[in-house]
Image (cartoon, rainbow over all chains, first blue to last red):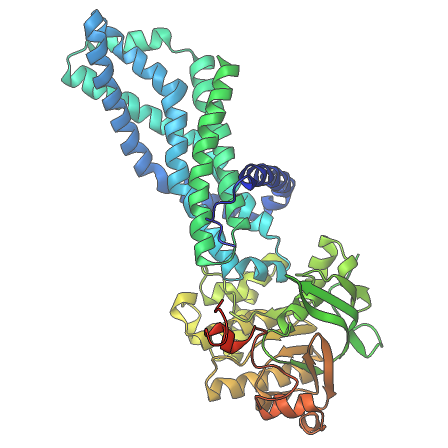
Length: 258
Length: 278
């Protein structure tokens, strides 16, 4: 059956079945975490791959998001004579929403897709079956290290993203548009709260998004049909499902954490 | 706890298949198939393409569940095994995949060393020597640092063979081991399979189509078709046992009980003659 073919009313049923299977896969992953401790080196290797190798895109995007945000806010706030609050608003926007959400979307596009494609190709070329035959648990050796690496990397990448966004905002606001440097920082530090904005906003959200994106990426890789079209389709599904999940989860988390 | 496959029993049969029934996508692959793989011998499984030879190996190793039947490996029923028991059993089995299945992140050396690193705590120098021994046996010691994408199909198969035997397992399953090998490599691989069998008492199961190679190396041949064993016996005599199956299969004839064409509708009708083409 062509997976791209429209399937009418079955779409809802199939989506629910996918979510259910993904939930069961999560339980399998969590159960395999103790067994994966012997593959610490593999987890570190994956952490380098999904974390360190994503740094460039995260830093560049963070910088531009901060710069654009400051430009827009300065323009709007200047109408009310409140340009001195620009830095504060940039910080709150980035810490509470843009930082975790944009980092997660970029992470899904950069690392999630490569995880899915890599595992999908391993399945298509019998590497997963070969591990099974060598009595090596592929969930503990392949899936769990990638899941844990995503979980660890996301909050760290989000911190880098936020720092670069603030730097971008400062660059535009202070260096270009002439906002006072002291005002920029003092307004920001007066309003930003560690628990509400940093812990709940940056760390908790990014941890949740990291878990969701990594789970979806690994799940799609493991369940992809072992064909080139299957791998391509699974990679696309990783981006689509991750993006929807990130934005939906962001709404739920924001509603509960506010 | 299931032990790795070791030659501990006096039983002359290492793998016993009884009443194996498998239906895939509505097609019956095995229909109450019975088979005994003798211990310490080289057994070849032959048959037309798509007849389920690889599927049979997957059943024996627990990679795929059958719809019914028993598969006893060293006296233990594979379908009843837990995951842990299956893994324990597989530690004693070497398996050569049809498409080699080398780990693409690792070079040749690390591919062969992989099972040793996962299941033993041998010192690095011993792992190195064991791997080089196996690579020398398949003629690829000089290719130890090449990546899988730098190997030809035949070389990749020989690396996979080195990986399959690195543990000196007591049961090795070879899925199409001779495909893509040049005559020199083929001869060496045949010698290697025979030597492993004779010196270590390894039981070998081969899935292959090359009758000449099978005649040189196998002790026993099963010919399967239509979901059952249709002929078995000594490789030098089975081709001449006179049955329609063996006559057609080993003679390479188009007509006979082994269909060359996959089941299909009327040919003329499909071409649009004498009715609407589908």
